[in-house]
Each structure stands twice: as structure tokens, then as C-alpha cells.
Amino acid sequence: MPTARRLFGRRLLSHWQEQIAIIRTAADWTVLLYLIIPGGLLGGRLYYGYWNETLPAWSTALPFLVIPLLLALLMCTGGMLLMVQEGDSLFLRQRQGWIRTLMLRGIVYSLTVTALKISAVFVLLLPFLIRGYGLPPAAVFGLWLATITCSWCIKLLGHIVAVQRQGFRRWLWLIPAITVPCGIYYRAVLFWDGYPVLLWAAAVLFAAVSGFAAAYRLSMRGTFMSDVREDYKQRMQIAALLLMGVLDKPRPTRHRPWIFRKSQPLLSTKLPESRLSAAAIKALIRNPAHLKLYLQFTGVSIAAILIVPVVLKWLFFIILTSLMTYWLHSFWSIFAGDDYIGLLPFTKEQQAEAGSRAVLILLLPFTLICAAAVCLPVYGWWGVVLFIPVGAGAGFLISRLFSAIRLER
Image 1 (cartoon, rainbow, N blue to C red):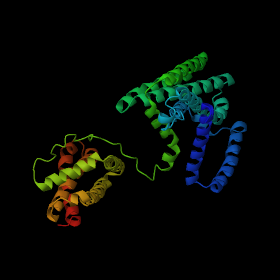
Image 2 (image 1 turned 60 degrees about the horizontal axis):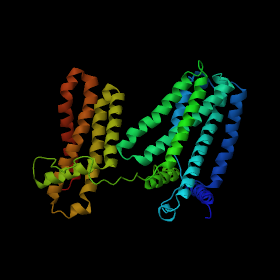
Image 3 (image 1 turned 180 degrees about the vertical axis):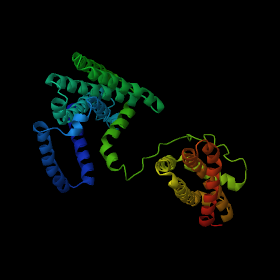
Image 4 (image 1 turned 90 degrees about the horizontal axis):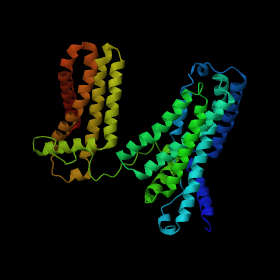
């Protein structure tokens, strides 16, 4: 490329082609035309009706403060795309001016896309803002300008934090970087009726902060790899959305587990069966996918028990406990069938005893919580005394029954 501008144009075109290719893997253009054309005609007719006919009843009952809240949520989506790539560390290392040009044009492009997205939403909201809430054109323009500049401010501040911080420190800095502009924006919109100048003042403030943030971003050094990582996240957003229900999120590489960090013995006895049981328990808890599924099923079970009538609570308790026990035994089968476990000299009797013990220990928290969800609403203060022995007894009996059926000795 002879100039940095042409290099940016080539990368931008490549980015668009990449996004189109990702979309085409999930939807054929012929099918999209059959959906877009009728949808566009129907949407245009509805939009015309919002301007010339009576507004829907739900729009008149909706308070105005919901609008800036929804706009604030919209402003927190998306990110910055700087058009930097991994190979720039080799080929553009001596041309900092080119890197700066790429980043500057990437910032301008990202902020332009943000402004277009906000403007498109405002076009859809115009009938409700003008006809439903009675905003004058000057107030609508001020709200639009404040929303765009606030979104710019959030994007830049969030991007600066993302490339400078890692781990929990990133979240500690992201909270004020996002909530402070959103709070100022919401307060300015809240008092627009009595003080219309607040919207314009907020827009000027956000624009000034965005300008300083952009200048600071261009002057930052030592964040090249973080820039590449954030650009890759933005380029893969559509792909991640399409694959959300197909592939599991990749697990982050950990040098030490987040729980049981010292691999201390979990059970007091040193029998081989106990060591194998403890390894299975740690494997489930340390795996985010398995632990998330365990907690999700527990939460759904508690909600189901609390919702159903009193006469069905115990029946639901037994059914849900049986389902959880079945899933835990399935997890044990996968764990015990691993190649690494097969290298260990455990007999079938020892594996069955270890599996029975591991399933019981993992099941007890679930049964105790669900038993509390049954006993406390039904028996009142007596439930405080009953739920522990009832939950432990039910967990012991059901786990032993499943172990006798499913575990081969």
C-alpha cells in the first residue's frame, strides 16, 4: 500500500466482506429477500400509521423515563474497531505514523457507526417522542445529540479501560467508565422539561470528554496486543452471535484453579475410593460449564417448587431430585470413562463405591436447598427443623437407589 489511508480502506473493505461472508453462512440471500421485502413493507405501513393514526395504547401508558433508560442500554453495546492486525507488529513497527493513521480512522469509523445506529433508533422513536410525549423539535434534537455524544464517550472510555486492564481490575474500572456518563445523561434527560439547556450542556460535556479520550487513546503506548485482541472481538461479534447456541464458550487458560487452589484433600479418609470421589467432585466444581448447569438446575428447581401448589411440592421435590441424581451419574460415567482414570488400578467395586460417594456428596446441597423450599413455606418454623434431616435422608435414599441400578460392581 502506498499510503496509510489506502491501507485503511483496504482493511475496511476486507472487514465488510468478512462480515457478509459470516452472515451468508447462516442465511441464504434468497431467503433473506423473502423476509426483508415483506417485513420492510409491513414495517413501513406500521411506521406510517404511527405518524398519521392513533398511537397504540401501550405507548401512551409507557412513562417517558423508560425511553432514556432503553437508550442508555443501547449505548452500552458495541465497541471500537481500530483496524490493527497482528502482522503490524512486524511490518509497521517502524512506521508509527501509519499506525496512528489507522487508529485515528478506526476511531472515526467506529464513532460514525455508533452515530448511525443511534440515529436509526431515533427515527423509529420519533412518532412516540413527538406525538406521544409531546417533545418539541428542539428537545428531540438535543436528546439525539446528547445520546450520540454520550455513546461516543462510553465507547472510548470503555475501550481505553479494556486495553489497559485485565481481570477483575477491568470490571472495577469499567463500572465508573460506563455508569458515570449514563448517570449524567439520565439526569439531564430527567430535568429536560424544567431546564432544556441541560441536554445541550450534557452534549457539549460528552463531546469534550470524547475528544480528550480520543487524543489520549492515540497517545497510548504498549497496548498493541490488547488492541489486536479487542479488534478481533469486535470482528467476531456476528460469528459469536450465530454460534452462541452451537458451541460452548472457550474456557480461559488458568495456571491455577479458582477453587481448591492447593489441591488439598477434600475427604478426611485416605482410602483409594475417597481419593477418586474427591477428584470427581473437584472436576465438576472446577468446570465452569458443569457448575453453571448445576446451579441453573438448582435455581429452576427452587422456583418450580415454590410456584406449584402445596399438594404437589413433595412430588416435584422427588422428581427433581431424581433428575439431578440421574445427571450426576451421567457426569460420573464420563469422568470414570476418561482415559486417564482408566490408567489407575481401580477395581469395579472401588469405582462403584467412589461413584456412589461422589454422587451423594454432590447431591446433598441440592436436596437440602430444595427441602428448605418445601418445608419452610408449608410447615413454617417447624420447617427450619425438618428440612435438614428430610433433605439429607432423601438425598441418601435416592442416590443409593440410583447407584444400585446404574453402577456396575
